[in-house]
Image 1 (cartoon, rainbow, N blue to C red):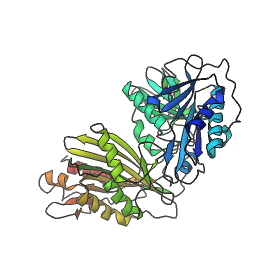
Image 2 (image 1 turned 180 degrees about the vertical axis):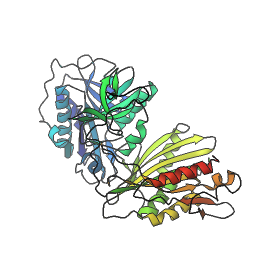
Image 3 (image 1 turned 45 degrees about the vertical axis):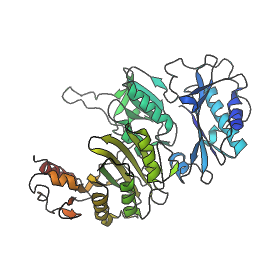
Image 4 (image 1 turned 90 degrees about the vertical axis):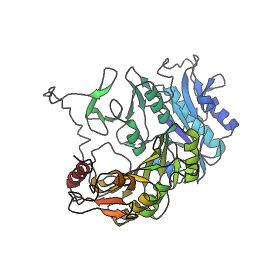
Length: 472
């Protein structure tokens, strides 16, 4: 497994501390840079990287080290410095560990994982060399084929780090899938799950019984034709191309924990006075009584919540789309991803949000109507779907089966209601008719879905409603 080693320090690593860490391979080790100097690399004699060190991040959001690493960090704000060792080179792992240990010793802090912390002595790397390009061309990519880029992650939570974000972008620009390989017991951040997309991108989990399997579908995988792909059952046919499902994936554990999941889309008029993130904050406050804790363009989320600063970043990147991750506090685990795009209709904000609840906690379902009305009347809501599902309180995605959520409500924004012919939006085949939100002259509609939360009948109601609204 590739070694990611992280120094968590109370003070900013100054240039001399970084230099002392970089000398962990001796004074004759080559040093290179990438990403306009944002990444420093210790290289072999041919200039290929052994260890890549990213610029330190100032983390001002509590709980991120605990959420992503299971580690105790210094009080916020603190500095997060990542070093990534090249795959399959033991000396590179020692270099990364020694770098982080030196950094933590000089500026005060600790190295993660604890077993990666090395001695302060120089690591002997004479004669050590690594794979030639293109496998070492991108620091986060471990294996590169004509079909996929493979990233190996040995950390408790596979998160949308800057490393992984760069790998995802590089793979997409090259027309490749991204396959993330992790050991058993690792979980996936919802931010990564939502970004992986479809085939051939996958989350691949190592398993003692079945070798490898897809952490989201359970399909047993093998390395074939330059990528991880499902194997076929012995009795599979072209008409029924079945694949075996890993036994580990099928070990369902009902802990009583649940998630309240909301997906909503807003379309704002393009205006210099527009402030983004207000709709997300409104929902967060309605359902938790507090705003989000922090946000960032990768994980860990480093910045305290600020719609104004979020808007400034999106404005600077326009007309290119912008992606954000937003997190909650430790008292109420929650995570949202926000994608902002500029279209002919205006500025579109697409939000995927989940709140986690323990077995003795009740999701605030009575607050959903107020949240929907606030979105519809103040934040140009286009549509929203609310679900309740059996899933982990910490909102991480396990490599095991988690059943689909049950739809609790669907909301149609005022503009969509207005453009629908006749009174189709107001008269539905459902037993319970929609609730009017906002002014009656230009209403949005809230559709309670009467499905039993203990089964999947809510999806039948939802599909029936969608067919009706589309005029099918």
